[in-house]
Length: 387
Image 1 (cartoon, helix red, strand yellow):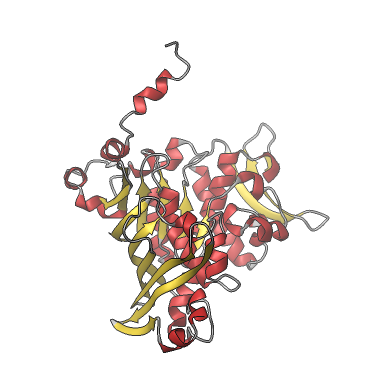
Image 2 (image 1 turned 90 degrees about the vertical axis):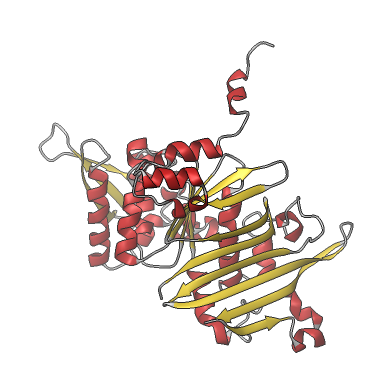
């Protein structure tokens, strides 16, 4: 299955009163700290957790530290307090739309569960599902769950369900990569990098060697003295990766993952996941722990990945280096800016300064930094100064 998100609409979701943006195959979500970059990415994670086996509305609202519908609902909502998420997607070249509106049951003193106020699915412009329906009116408790999560009601749109399931959230934590157990992956979640090394052993040797060879080639460009990367199992059957570096000894020196720098582990994990075929990849600040020279290469790596396996990548960042490549089009940027009451999201191609920079073949980084810089950022330097 191949697919990507093409549009996102949100209403009263976390920092955002309203979001209505088109999405490209490569999306850079940029903005200042605490503007809501992670919360925007979390909308896709929420839909994925709705669709996965064992997920569903109750678990999705409570999972990933969301804290229920009253916690995800925007504090800036006024007359309309419902939470809305809507996406359009191309799945195997066919257009789909999924829209979900949630309302809070009960009162602020005695909060009840979230209830489906509206659920709608369209395929090729035709309505496949519209709720509430007659069954919901006959039994209102059915509105405590989405049709998306139930096999008895999602038969007509399982292609959409499977696409939403295929989205993957990745935020590689080096300390967790060093945990070799797949059991740890179930505990902490694959997306944090736990079980990565064990997972390398689950693919065929040909696939693993091919992917490690491509990673090895990439690492040679950014790691001094680096020569080779291998996966192996020790005499206890525990999986490891090791890297060979040039050394005064003729055969070089090998290091295992326990001695890798955090940046090296993050880069290996990021490249491994990028090289997998699959659904949309949701990346949280991929530049962390990486040298700026390596960060500046990530957009081209992502472009190469997209050309090979057509995997959509949606990532958050506040690094100017990540958007310094002149190959980035303004339409690939979602620019977050804070106001007195909320965070706004604008597609970069709707901002004149970014369009003009792109037309002049200039990097967008300087303009993005100026657009997203907090107004009082210079005051930070006064911390600790005598008053």
